[in-house]
Image (cartoon, rainbow, N blue to C red; front, top):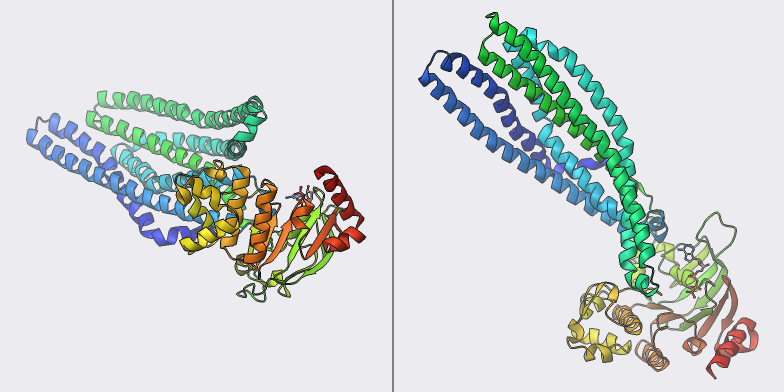
Length: 575
Ligand SMILES: Nc1ncnc2c1ncn2[C@@H]1O[C@H](COP(=O)(O)OP(=O)(O)OP(=O)(O)O)[C@@H](O)[C@H]1O
C-alpha cells in the first residue's frame, strides 16, 4: 500500500477535513435522542412549555450544524477520492504507454480498459465511503452505546450478546464476498474485450455477416457477468435482512423489558424512546460499517488488479542505454547475426541469423512470402521488439544504447495496419510534427500523393476523419499515413507494405518523390510486388525468416532462385 501514499499526500487536508466534518453529524446524532428524552420526561410530563421550546431550539440548531457538517464532510471526502482516482488513472495510463508489445500481449485490451475505468471507480467509492464512515459509524456506535449505558446499564447489557453475533456475521460475509468480487471484475474484462472487438471490427463483422455469431458471443459473456453479479449480490443482500432481523428482535426485547420497568416505576417513558433510538443508531452504524467492509472487499480486488499493471515489468527500456540523448544523425542501418522469436520457449526462430548493412541515404527493398518475417525484422530497428540474438546498429551504435525517444524520433514507420485517429486531416498529419507549418503539411501530402484527393474534399485539410480513418478509402488512408511519416522528416523511413492499396501509377509517383525529395533519408520498403522494390539500392529476400538473397535487382535475378521465382510468377501474372 506504500505506493499509494503519493496519491493521498497532496490532498491530505481533504482526508483530515472530511472525517472531521462528519464528526459534527456524529455528535448531533448522539445528542438528539438524549434531548428528546429530556423533552418527554421533563417538558411534556411536567407541562413545562418554556423548557420544551428551549430544548427544541437547541435541537434545531444541532440539526443545522449536522447538515452543514454532513455536506462539507461529503464534499471533502469526494475531493479526496476523485483526486486519488484521477492521479492513479493517469499513472496507470502512463505505465501502459510504456508497455512493450510483449507487455501488451500479457493483458487483453478489454482488461486494461476495465482496470482503467471500473476498477478505479471501485477504489474511489471505497475511499469516499471510508472517509465518510471511518469516524461516523464507529463514533455513533460508541456514542450510542455509552448513552444507552448511561440511561440503563441493565438494558444495555443486551449489546454484549448481539454485537459478537453480528461481528461473526460480518467476517463470514466478507470472506465469501472477496473471491466473488474478483470473479466479477474478470467477467467484466471479458465483456469489455468482446465489446471492444465487436465495435472496432464492426465493418468486418457486417461484411462477413457474422453479426449473429458476435451477438451470441456477447450474450454468453453478458450472461456470465450477470451471474457473477447476482452471486455477489446474493452475499450482499443476505446481510441487510439479517441485520434488520437482529434489530427487530433486539427492539422487541428492549421494549418488552423497558415496558415492564416503566410499569414497575423504574424507568421513564422518555428513556425508552431514547433507548430505542440508540438501538436503531447502533444497528444502522453496524450496517453502514458492514457495507463499508463489502466495499473494501471489492476495492481490494480492484487494488490487486491495478497493482498487477503497475507491477508489470517493462521488458523493453532504455535504462542501460549508453547514449540516452543521442539523436539518429545519418541513418545507416546494420543487422549483425540477428535472431528473434515471439515465444521464447519455441524451438523455431521467426528471424534467423540475419546480417546486412545499409548505408545512410540508400534504399533497401525487402521482399519475401507472407509470414517470412519482413515486418518482424524492421520492427527491431525502432525497438518495438528486441533481438534475442545479435545486434541492430543505427549509425554504428547498438539501438539498445539509444534513448527510446530519440531513437524512435529518428525513425518514421508506416505500419502494415496503420491507423488514423478521429480529428481533422491536418491534426492527423501533424502527429508527425506538431509544429509543422501549413507549407510543410502540404508538401508532405503532395509527396505522398495525397494532396489531390485532400483538395477534392469540401473541407480540404480540415476534413474530419472518423475513428481509425474509416471515412476514407484504403489507398487514401495509406497515403495519409505516408504523409504523416514524411512530415516527421525522419532519418530512416520504413514503409511496411504501405502502398498495397494504392494503384501502380500513384505508387510509382510516391517512389519518385521519395527518391528526389528525400535524398538523405534512408528508406526501407517492404513490398509484395517486385516492381515496388526493383529500383532499390539493395534488396533483401527473406524466406522463412532467413536471408535467401541480398543485392541489386540484377544480381538477385542472376543469383537468387527465390527472387527469380517471385519475379517469374509476378511477370507471368502481369503479362
Ligand atoms: N505478435 C506476434 N506474436 C506471435 N507471433 C507473431 C506475431 N507477429 C507475427 N508473428 C508470426 O511471426 C511470423 C512472421 O510474421 P511477420 O508479420 O513478420 O511476416 P511478414 O513477412 O511481414 O508477413 P506479411 O507479408 O504477411 O506481412 C509469422 O509466422 C507470424 O505468424
